[in-house]
Length: 316
Image (cartoon, rainbow, N blue to C red; front, side, top):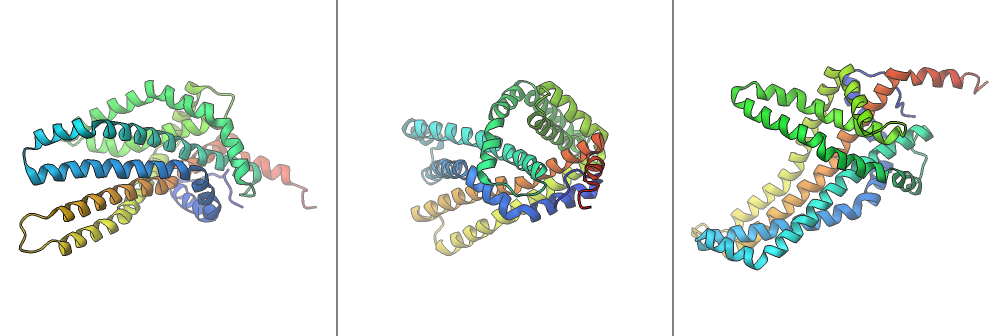
């Protein structure tokens, strides 16, 4: 049995996040793709066509010159398709991001309830449905509260990065703000007695109580995810470069139409792989925030000690 309620330090956040994934991997990801798979496929198709459309336009301008004129003609001919595809893709990104995060919160909730993963996909869906209203409400309220704060922070940090001081600000406060939003979301969904701003306040308090450990663990997990995602996307990228070099005659200065088409398809595929890999590996980040959340709850309520007291005499 995996202990959610446990006092943890910096290293424990990382190791227990990996242990959680390893312990429940088959059950967790099987249900994840069953529930979010449709949204992920729609997003992948939208990203593929959007990328291919744009790459074809860029290569057409590169071959023929007069880029501004050709770009205007291309927009006049395919502008509606590009805008429609972009809107659908953006909506899918928002919806899939919300559903992916909410799925993990629900999974933790059921692991806590059953003291393991002895629950079905039907139960996951049923609990998920109870959180849909608060899921969208959190997102809409965050659009006018958290997001402006984040935008202002990153704009200020980017401007200060030219004076070096902005780099440590991004390194330290970027992960801490990510943890703040994540823990607030966990609290908002799992504690029905609290409102939106109450959840933000409690999430901030959780981060503040273990600032260095939570910020450091979130930063390390972010680096791990970036390394894994880069490794996955680098493989098709290298294959594409090799195919491009093989298919291009050494005597030809300009690649032909077939080569340009192959490059646009490869770039679109790499983009799709990057998106899918990003959502897949981001589960490690959401899980790590769940581990941090339940650790904070343990620090507040000493839940594990209460459970041990309740279990006294169970096996006598």
